[in-house]
Each structure stands twice: as C-alpha cells, then as structure tokens.
Length: 467
Image (cartoon, rainbow, N blue to C red; front, side, top):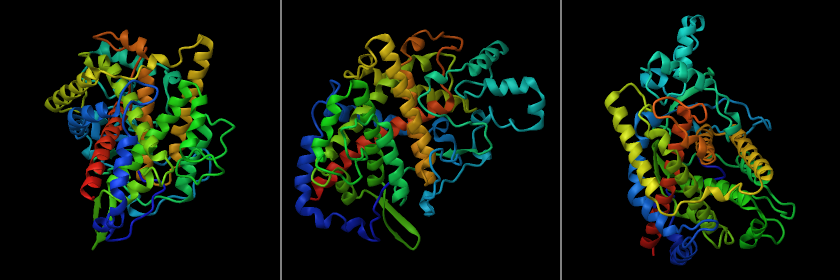
C-alpha cells in the first residue's frame, strides 16, 4: 500500500544510494541512536523486540501466511466512500487486485457462502442454518447437530458493541476472495491529493487533536507555523494515556505501511519486466531525522509500540484457539492440523515474551468515565475503518482494510479478557467470537508488522554497506 509516494525514475535502483554516500553514515548513526532504548508508555525496549521478532516470530509468521487458511481473504473493494465523492481512483496497473476464482478457493473456506444465492439454499431452512453455522469459517463443518445449533445461535449474537471496525458483508455479491500471496502490498504509484486526503482525514479528524495544535497531524503534510518536528509532539504529553495510545497506533500503522513500500519499491521496469526492491532514498525521505525534522525516529518507535499491542492481543487470544473445538478448517485434514500446530506454536512464543504492554492500565478510571472514553476510542477507530473505503487504489484499499481490521480485532481481544477466560472447552461461547475474516486479518496484520521490523533491520544493513 503506497500512499503519497514519489516515483523513482527507471534505472534508479542500483544508483539510488550513490548521491547519499556522504550522509548515509550520519543517517545510520542517528537512526540507531534514536530508534533504541525503552519505548514510551511501556517497559519494553527496541532491541528486545528486534531479537524476539527477527529470530523467533518472523520465520513462523511468514510460514503461517502461506497456509491456505490465511492466504485467502474475502473483501468488498466496491463499497462507496461514505465521506466524499472519490475522484482519485488509481488507473496504474499496479493498483489492480486480481480476485481469486471460486474454483481455487479451498472447499472448507467457501462452504459457508458458496450456496447462499442458489435457489435451493434460499428455499431450504436446514441448508440456510448450516450456512449460518459455518459462516465463522474457523471450525470444522462436520459438527454434530447440537453443535451446529449452538453455532447458529452464536452467529446471531449481536456483538456490535465489541467491534472496533466496520466489517464487510461477506455474503454481498460484491465481496470477492483475494489471494494475498498473489496481491502483495508494495509500491503502486498511488499518490497526490486523493491519497493525502485519506491520511489527513484519519489524523486531523480522528486522532483526538487538541485545539492548540495548528498544523495537520498527517506527518507527511507540510508544516504550518513554528510547531514543527520534535516540538510538535509536545501536545501528546497533555493527553491521557488512552488518547496517546490511539495516536501511536495510527502513526505506527502509517510507519509500517511506509516501510513496506520502501522495501518493495518499483526500481525499474525494462521490457515490461518490473524490478522490485529496497529504495534507500525513499526510506530517507520518510524516516531521516533531518528530512523529517525529528519525526522519523518517532514514527519508527510508534511502529514498535503497535507491534507490542498486537503481540499482546495474540498472547491473550491463545486460549480461544487452544480449545479442541476450534479447527482451522479448509477441507484438507492434514494441512489443517499442521496449520493449527504452527499457530499454537506462535501463540506459545507470544506468551513467552517477557515485556508485554499492560492493557489494564487503559480505561482504569472511574467506571462511568472509563466506559465513555472506551466508547469514544472505539468509535474513532471504527470511523477510520470507514475511511478505508475512500482509498482510490484497489491494492492499497485491500491492505488498508485488512490491516485496520486486524488492529481492530486486536483491540477487541484486549478488551474482552473476561469473556475469553470464560470460554467453554467443548462448545462455542456467546460472549466472545471471532469470524474467519477477523482471524485472517489479525494474523496477516501482525505479519505485516513483523515484516516491517525485519525490513527495518535490512535497511540498517544496507546503510552500513553503503558507507
């Protein structure tokens, strides 16, 4: 997803770093100095996250994303923008998303929806109920009748108060399966006023901006007045923890997206054969302390903070998946068993991390005030999920929707600890549930963050070799 990108000309790949040699050593030392140490609002340090992610989590999460259960994501890319008339739809070929034919989707994944619009389904209550029972997609469809009835009730449970995201209607004819491996997040050329308006709306209207701040909160927007760079962040000190966390989550997501496009950038295209790879110049533009007036390292620290939040959610939701009743069902019994084993191994790793963010420090004031603040927090984030339908590039929209839904699912998990603790072992719970879409978004969104931190280390190595 590449929003607000300047395109490098053909042939800049290998030569991009040449004019920067005199400053790369300085850049590297400054980045390493400022993107280090203990993160704000938690007790974890950057080096611990680097080692944990790059050597333990990243190899496993990358392998998990290649599994059938996690590579197919159903999304509606045709929902209209609810806030303004979108006139910046991207016509560049790299913005295109290739939907996956139904014949390629594993039978266990599409079982809950494949017959929804057929005549026999609409006329047969039993089949319709089975379709509702399987709509979660996270459990084996070969359940007893009693279990099916329980899942039907579960599917009807109204948990809208727990949702931090606006979920796509998977049963809509406009919703299509996408193979995430064949539509990777990378540079697309989507830029200009349309892309800037999306991010500006997210930062300016949804990040609890205090009235005393006189410039847009979009880090890539031109500054106004004297409140630039490092001094810009002084406004955060006056906010409560929950609102500081909110801004850091959005900033961290933005930084992660920028790292993805810097690491998988269109370097050149010769005879229709594109060459993709890391673009040091683009990395410098977005994260160099000098070019960003001190904001670049803060953006990267917010990436680490977001990683901690989603890591904590994975450790908290582990009991949900550890139950024998939950089966990551695609129809391939052997692969499904291997996928669950790999997922549980990842959960074990997340639980072993010694410096988790303590979500109990949030919304811990008086009950009435805390409830009101949590609802405000939830609605602001849900509004951002609506804004994803305003992104004019289909590939950017796909990954924007997936990553916001993944973060929204993580927040839902963090604030559902009591419900998760009460989960029955052999039957579904009406108090906490995850749809297959939420599960796929959660693990793929965390996979994107894991990749970002790995790519950041790669950029440091590239800068060292360019000295």
